[in-house]
Amino acid sequence: MNPYIPHTRRDIEEMLSAVGLPDVEALFSDIPEEVRRRFQPLGLPPRDEIWVHRYITGLSQRSTGTKLIPFLGAGLYDHYVPPVVGHVLSRSEFYTAYTPYQPEISQGTLTWMFEYQTMVCELTGMEVANASMYDGATALAEAVYMARRTVGGKAVLVPKSLNPNVREVLATYVWAAGLELVDVPYDEQGQLTLSEIPEDTCALIVQEPNFFGVVEDLSSLKERLGKAFLIVYVNPIALGVLEPPGKFGADVVVGEGQVLGLPLSFGGPLLGIFATKMEYLRRMPGRVSGRTVDAEGKEGYVMAFQTREQHIRREEATSNICTNSALCALAATVYLAALGPEGLKRIALLSMERAHDLAERIFSLPGFRPAFSGPFLYEFAVSFSEAERAVRKLREAGIAVAGPALLEKCGVKNAFLVAVTEKRTPEELDLFVRSLSSLAGKE
Image (tube, rainbow, N blue to C red; front, top):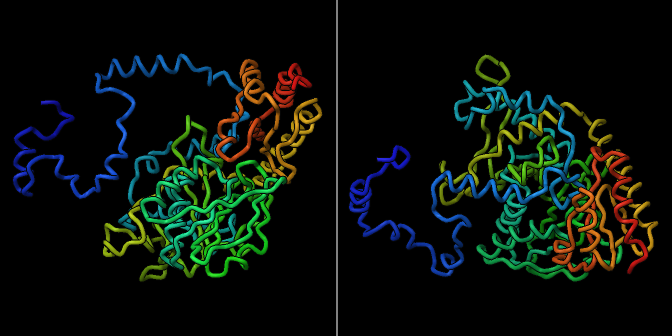
């Protein structure tokens, strides 16, 4: 018997008999057939480990990713991670710890969770934050669910300038909940243009900065929405220089926290940020660490809120999210503590300075134009008649950018996306411009 398969066929038959079911497939009979038809098989066939390792290795050898200079953005960014982050994360009391149910032996974990929540509140301008979620996309979807639970309505206003990958996750969630996504267009600046607001609107989503890297104007949006939620999806690094969404009346602020001390790591693991107003505390998914005093008056930390299905809330739970992305949230806590407010601001300004320098040089080349005229921080869209050819030319030079396919999902044709962080050197910027020079004027 394979030690990794704990149940024999006889064990399985006895368990099925005890619950009165004919086979394992019957366990899934409650899932509607419409949903089950959407299931897709995994990409790998059921083969042995050696075959799978050889196959995956072969795929990796076809990739030149390790040699490419990442001017990639589109949601994940190549920021410098101070060594102190990895040092703290590698301590066994952190990377082997799991759920802090017993506060008596979990004070260290509960303490950093409280510190993380505090830092998120300071960044976003909100009153309360949870101890993190799985990633930014699912955090956004949970924020929409929270809006519906609070104000009702079926329409979710989504700008065409929202990250299309995030939008796909959101679309899956709202489909399951019977909600409707309503597109909000953008203007020549790349900023959303909100005109009519449907009566049954439960939330408006704004990405700040948006997928094109353009900074949105959040002022007066909440006043126009009334009771409907204003949900802002943020890049936390950008909040080092931008006014926090809480100043504009945002009801929920969510975002992807990968930029806070986490490497790209081929796309994961990630970190979902979630903050809201105090009045919505009991409607917020996830868990919250709180500070208190014991019977002797000594300060301590406890799990203050867990509005989850596994506890007494059961079917009245706010969400089935019953944990947090703990190690990633710890990385963000150490990162923010190491940088401090001025350090975070400096990272944003350095990235912005180098991005604007590169943009100016690119747009001085004949045929290359900014796709949008709105203000940007350290990511921008470049319009060129042969965008695919430009992307290939950059790749030949060892440079990776987000190609036209992603922008086309947002309605932008013949353009590619460039992100510049503080890690990009003057030599790399020179290489970028040289690589495009041979295409200049050949529209």
